[in-house]
Length: 236
Ligand code: IPE
Ligand code: IPE
Ligand code: MG
Image (cartoon, rainbow, N blue to C red; front, side, top):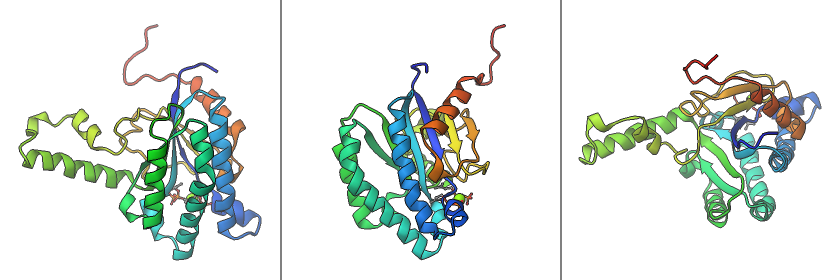
């Protein structure tokens, strides 16, 4: 595969349906989803992926039953505890977007530690979207830009895309080239709305717990056959 490094965003959906199909509790689907995360991370080593952004928990997911939310937080703790050393060894740089302050305090600490530990790594940039919602992110960005104006650091005329981009949590990350959503759903569910302005989309029926290297490879091969125009015309 060509060497052009891509930023891939994945909406990891279908854990519940995977479990239901096996008459297992939903929590087992989330557990199996962790294995799919590990497989996907490993697969990136052999593929042209420079940035991977995983939609792990949306702002709206807080509305799920308390037990399911707690189970998801517990899995996050487990993932960070069991995988951090390996992630670091592989040169992965961990990053997070989302409402940090809404997470349980111990998870906030674990994330801060993991991000600090891996900040000098030069391999894959793994961004975990946790309690993330694009509308909330853009609302915060609007507030931050307005605060600069109020403070006299910026005039209205100076507000441009660059100013907005700098106020988003994704500042420093390239825009996603490809957004994958599993489980057959075809929507963004509040994921990277601004950043995905020119992203390509790939939808697969595969449920997230079944996702792996084969699916990721297929998505990238499909992406590479597309023609991205960015609003211009290609010379003929
Ligand atoms: C994705 O699987 C995991 C999260 C949203 C946290 P779901 O739990 O949404 O699974 P389905 O969509 O009910 O199958
Ligand atoms: C989107 O999945 C969020 C994550 C994958 C973390 P959902 O299952 O929450 O999305 P909807 O509710 O079907 O749109
Ligand atoms: Mg879902």
